[in-house]
Image (cartoon, rainbow over all chains, first blue to last red; front, side, top):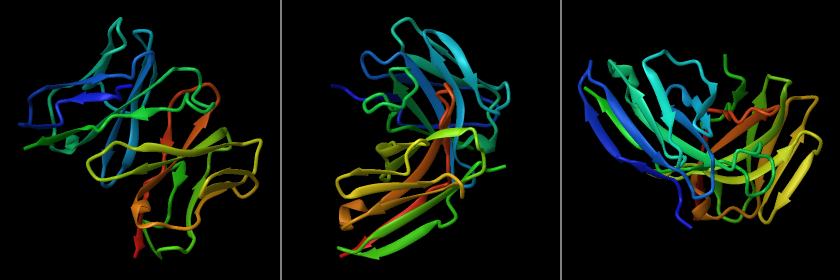
Length: 117
Length: 112
């Protein structure tokens, strides 16, 4: 069974540009969440999509947005990039049933390492 | 305001000994806790979890203890193996939300 796939793995962008990251969840998973990992802030929740609808959003500015397609694949977009957006962006997928039973927990992809210069 | 705290950034343990990783939380609405392990250049992988209605959960070499009154949980690894060397994240869930709140992680190094 294929895991969560994130593309690209590495990305270098210039301040002011925008970027789109992609996430393909595990087959059958309908919930996709995005997290930002930085050395100073650890792993922080960005947003969660379930059945193409954003269900939950973290405390990030509106420059961070996302969407989910009918096949559960998700994209995350960051506009007007800032140096502080340099981070590892992780996508996690789950069945979307509360993540409390064995096998329903969130499975993470390898992440996209974004560097803003 | 960190709702989940891992106060030890790093821990070194000899192979075969016990590793104890600690986690504290402040939000009393958290009702489910998870531990994830992360190797460099990989995403976090689920290790073990515990519901707030329990105080202990075991899975092989891994045991998680929950002290609700102290808002504290710990992960015990016995015996520790060099392959356990990784960053360990404590995470929490509340209610029906599927938003994981993570601690800052503890780098465990198991020395051969």
